[in-house]
Length: 74
Image (cartoon, rainbow, N blue to C red; front, side, top):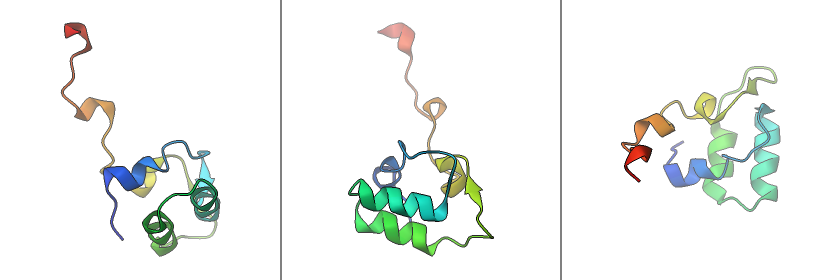
């Protein structure tokens, strides 16, 4: 299982919180690449675990704080 920023972006508008099955269904319905569905299917899940955000799936998902963008300059 591997995540990239591009693959994870397909889940950015997912209906959080969600279970693994709900995320797989969402990915299929929205036409996400097969790699997204395969990554979700490969995740180990403990009895209907609910994921609150993409960070629960991919802890290294970059947040706005990770980018060096100063809004005051523009």
